Image 1 (cartoon, helix red, strand yellow):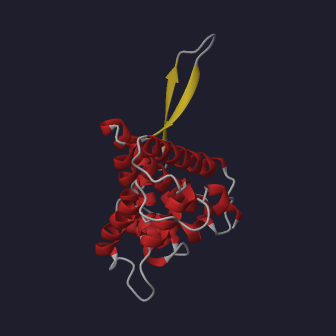
Image 2 (image 1 turned 90 degrees about the vertical axis):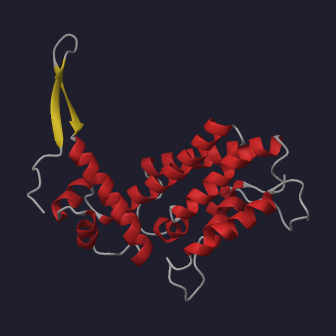
Image 3 (image 1 turned 180 degrees about the vertical axis):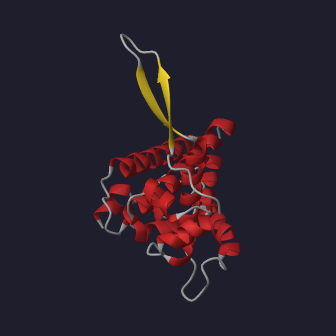
Length: 226
């Protein structure tokens, strides 16, 4: 591993009125390092939990410890970035599917399967940790994710594709539970079953409903009140 650059930013001078101002933007290699750190952290948090040593994350990412701390001053900052990045990618999957095909249920399926690939089930213990759950970055990522899923589910209901008695909370609980390996099973060993069982769940969401569900549809507010 070669020496790390001392700076992660470059400074460009732009013309501003009435005087010139300097704009600082991240270097391309610094952005790549940050992405590698977040990817490595997501993998290792899934495998070992959120308390995995940061130097082990740095080693897997192929960067030095100083680069990790330059991007993330503490563990909470890194955990928060991993949680935000996972929510962003799952939201993007639904947005892209909706834009490409216009089929709301297909977008819902894309979201569910991407959530499993992104290990959404591993987020619960992270969000329950000590970091600030009301941090602006986390709230923005959560709001984006919830909004696109509400939109997708509303469209699917309006098109007669989705049964009317399920809510966003029902969806998120099911995805988290079905993508979590059973007790005693290796976390990665259960992967071959996850998408099969998620598709069975998705088929159960299709309208017309074949049974009446007990209780009321769960919302995200319901989950947050638990």
